[in-house]
Image (cartoon, rainbow, N blue to C red):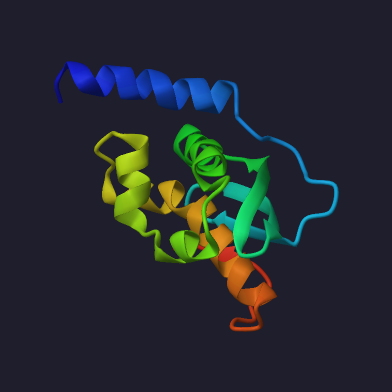
Length: 136
């Protein structure tokens, strides 16, 4: 934990207090909800697709700073990305995006939005059938 981690903590707090793309989209291609029951995080993600590209992302919900900051950062990261890029994302990408060491307990908070966005796409494509995503 050097000087760098303070900067990242500031970034997480900033995204938590001033979330980007918070709210909902007018007519999303898909909407999906998920929760991390351990921590009480809940997130709903709206995604608008255009020819295999993610045009817009919005999210709403509440929970701990890590889950909300990760959702906010992810909403920025995904705009303009391809659905393949979304599907290839994993926990390491999320942790790298957050920029801080995260305890194993907190990883479930961090990856919630990513998992919700991915599951939502798979449900939309007919590859998966779950009512809501949970990270446990």
